[in-house]
Length: 172
Image (tube, rainbow, N blue to C red; front, top):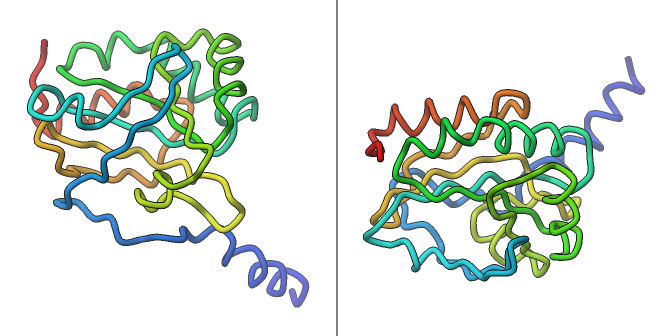
């Protein structure tokens, strides 16, 4: 029991995000990030036009992240029923995300935040230097509508579509 307690005291601080200040109702921090499809995306590009969802994930080519990316690729039609632009994002280098997108068949952009500045602004960067698996829902006005910190990689696409419906995002 003593070893378990010591281990928990050592591990738990590393899973806490570095910036927990982003809340529902806050303006979403702007970003301009390169993506796996060769383009650069900014939140400002969608302001006044479309809702945006950013599904942060810890690391390309890992098992949970692969499952989540494949879920979004295989079931993206559920998400595309809504007037939304969606991304996965990590702090991996762009080259890793390009390879990861190809390997998983991602038909949506994977954003690369190698500087970790955007992950920090969104409160998803943990002390180990990876992004936590959190999904951020932003309305067309740029306001955070939901922060999902309990993401199931297997049902990520279905859950994202359900959340979009619950948030009242218009269907196409």
